Amino acid sequence: MVRSRRARSIRSLLTTLGGVAVLTVALAGCGDDDGGSTAGSYGFPQVTQDDKAPITVWVDADRTKAADAFKKAHPEVPIQVVTYDGSANGSNSFRTKIQLFDRTQSGWPDVVFSTQNNDAAWASQPSNGKQAFAAVLNGGLVPKDTLDKFTPGALNPCTVEGKVYCLRNDLAQVVLWYNKALFDQFGYQVPATWQEYQALGEKVAQEHPGHIVGTVGDAWTPEVFFWGSKCQANEITGPKTVTVNTTTPQCQRAATMLDTLIKNGTTPNVSVFTPEFVKKYSGKVLMMPGPAWYAGAIFNNPQSLKVPAGQLGVAPPLAWQGEEAVTGNVGGGTWFVSSHSKNLKAAEKFAEFVTTADDYQVAVAPGYPAYGPAAEKWVKKQESSGYYATDLRAIVTAGTSIWPGWGSGIFSQEAVWAKTMTPAIADGKSLVTLLPEWQTAIKNQAQVNGYTVK
Image 1 (cartoon, rainbow, N blue to C red):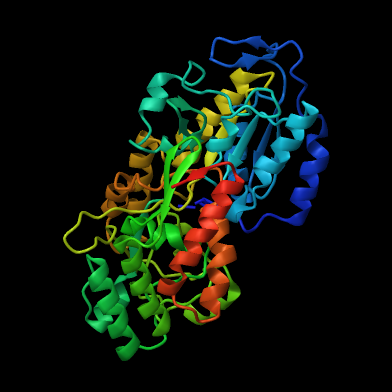
Image 2: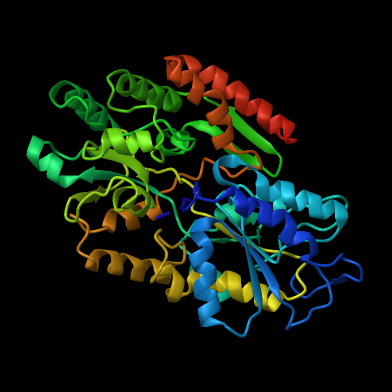
């Protein structure tokens, strides 16, 4: 899937500066103030509704295809599409723009896509003494039958105190991607545990130097390795409380493993979305733990690794020996409907379409859909393509194995990691020795955002 890409999916690194410039200009008149708001039947105040009012939708570059699919399916709905960065890599642009509109009490878009899964934490809260930006979706605006068909747990990042404030675009569960042709050539067995993964990484460094088993160069590294190790770095325990303890054995074991693999060169500090990565590691990726959207964003991508058909296999999330396997979640993306919209009917139709309709989620979307019925069809389509060397059951299994102990707070764990840990790794510092520094950085960022840290 593409996490975001984080999808990405989840996360678009392709958005142009021109798109950002368009955002500021185009949104100057997108919406009216909340004068005359009345308590609506959906559980939040509503402005006077106009079923013919055009809706403004913000998308990242990767989700323009979603808007195109909606336009084709619903030409009767007037829609203006604005491209922005999708808050990729913790840029926080979504929240920053909405805060501006909250101050002026005008300009809000009707629907917004974000590559981040922590936006519901702030978008669900009243701002500037007024109502929250995000509309409550499970108060009748989105049919209950639709909400119930999302993969169990998929809407957890969208849910605050029992109310659903967004719809997930796709899931970004972590699996083990591997090159079956290389495994067969080298005579290796696909690992099932993190201990076996590390041992194979050490073997590769000796027997096939230059080949890699993963990377630590992206901001979502903690979501791949530490979340999947049940590291207590981000346990959101309430609307404004978080427990942070990166000195636990679960954090230590992940850091120790990565220190070994970074040192021997099999897990480089290089982003998968850089020319350096493509140039240096095309044909050299033996395996790589990563989100579902890596398939389309990295492996089966003519702009990236271009792994030939019949070589890419996928295995279930790795387990720590003696434990049940759990996985992190690397983005996936979320869709919000504005509580300020003058045309909630059209806004809801758009959000429901892009998250559930086969026209987009099955026919076009590169990532594993969060909506259950679409996910089943997406898997069948991918398997029928003949591209993969294995079936995709591992992705389905991983989709219900995301560890719930890593929450979705207002602050971005990716931004903290990128600022604190990535440069330190580049300087050759050990992750084990950096764990206390990481904890302090998370604590400080959480407190800046009003959290009580335990």
